Image (tube, rainbow, N blue to C red):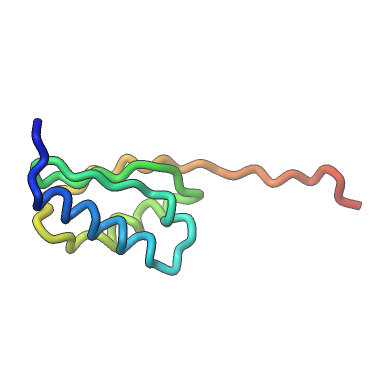
Length: 83
């Protein structure tokens, strides 16, 4: 399946929007667009940020659907070594 210029533009717009947001964890999100479907991939530390990523890119030009494949990963905090 070939990607057209609009798909590349939509993915670039979405990544820029996420990476420029105030949410640092969203800088690690990768976006691809195929036939008007924008795919989000990567890891975020909360369901809130998974939903926020989708909300931030909801107005992506040329996108008719968002496939949010972000995985929520709880980051463990080690208490070892603390006195």
